Amino acid sequence: METVPRQHITQKKIAEHVQRLGELYPPIPLDSVDRTIKRPGLVARKFGHVIDYLARVELEVDRNVLELLVLLPDVDEINKTFYADVWQPQEIQHGLILDRLQQDLGRTAAKPHLDVSFKIKILGALAHLKPIQDIAKLMYFLTGASTERQAVLAYNQINRGMQELDETAISETIITPIKQQEPGHFAFYQMSATAMIQDKVLRPWQLFLTRVLREKSYHLVGTNQMKQYKADMGGVMVDLGLDHDLEAYAREVGRVENRLLWAHKQGMEFPPYILKALKESVDLYRERLERGLTFA
Ligand SMILES: [Fe+2]
Ligand SMILES: [Fe+2]
Picture (cartoon, rainbow, N blue to C red):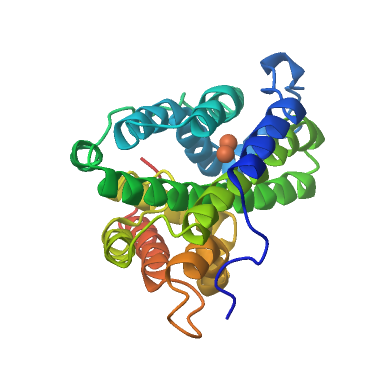
């Protein structure tokens, strides 16, 4: 099994990637969107929940920046440029555009969850110690790779759905431009995590601890480790048809950390905690359906 790519990821390569993203993809202006919706009722019925979820998660980017500053008190120039000049300005526009779309569909505005959790604060306090800082950094990159991959997959699916509904304006002026920006984010986190492994930044005990922490704290994008959001995310997976093959989805979402953290587990296709999180979300959603409740 391949452990790390043969190509060496240098800091220079990462910096060039960040610069290219900034040049290629300026934040999407709100007024570039064509707000034509042919059948708002139908779009709301089929994808309303998904759009609500994505809008909230994208708007939570400001909390993600706060978390990053807590977790990486000694953040370096490349990371700073990425989150301040590329990532945050792009993601917040995704959030504002989707939030307006959900309101155009007659749904209520998103309520992003902007408090940094206690767990993050504790890890942040410990992250002032250099060995912990490196663990926090790898965790941050792995989380980024996993969540951005989930975003890519979700936007691909929703775009297909909008095209099937013949909602060309939504597909071409909202989802397509947003979807073009996500793979670059994923690539940044993937390259950054890979570089840490290739350069052997972490000692074996630090890698061990990273694995334990991933197992204990892994969560799907936007669930904020809260039951209600986990069930919502289950609903997103069901609405996008991603629940048909959860193992395939786990493979996609977990590829980076499977390769970087678990290469010694020969033949393992994805870390089991990822499939567990996916199943839990879908189960919580189904339970809620059985109780006759829809999305909160
Ligand atoms: Fe985004
Ligand atoms: Fe993103």
